[in-house]
Image (tube, rainbow, N blue to C red; front, top):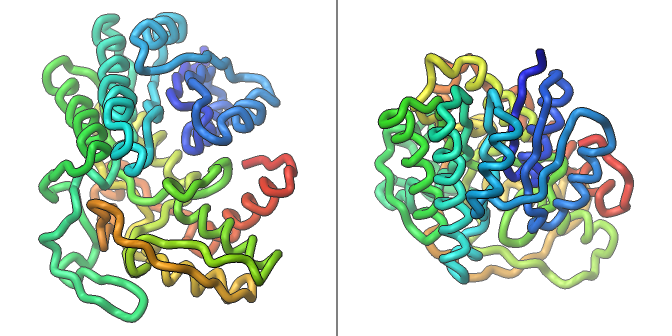
Length: 349
């Protein structure tokens, strides 16, 4: 019998990749999405181009929608990826941010709890639950900030410090996921992500910075005289890059080992070897595309981290997982996706 999965936010960037991978692995997949994100309809069309996926139009903020799809699917695994993903949006509409991230997550947990289902529940949290990380001793170099005291990056013992409505809503859901394992025995696991990028990502200025700047670089390639784009801060802020295929494999590794990792949290990213600042990305794109990128600096975004790289030691140890796609190979695939998406070419991912 096929295993059954529910992917909330399954028409989003990461969700559509998860759904497609599960389908390829022989799972019966239900996708719940309200199609509010840019690119959601395109990703749905792509998902439904082959058999094996059932789409349910609904919203995790509505407990009735959640109950209906979980009662119908009775999933062996839930990949809870629906969410409000932009810090800037959370500042302009905190209630929507709360209802989407915190209330929506509670609705999923409660629906599973009331039915006493043994489903594995994978939750995509955020590095933003650690706040600005102002306590880190940073060094400023030509193109990036470094944290000499954290040679492997930030691990899961870093104290939580919810800042901005987005950090609060993601952090609340993060903690509910962990507590429902303690209090009610649910099979939850939390991933605190750095930067995920790759195919099916319709990036915007507010979210998906790697894809967004790849779009800007390709636009300069087509028209070298176009107006400069903007960046927030000085461009030396650092994140680790994780290609979406590797993120999906991390999720599946947790599901396969849910009995031993339930109730635990993992920082999941590309690790120090795949860390990158904005300025380093710009230098790479300039070399790769033979362009000169011009940009204007805006003030730092509220509560932005100058440095976050995930220490992935725990994921290596307990999930037997590590990234397989290096940042340069991933950037090549990102550029290919952006080119084909801009040209309206059907893409596999």
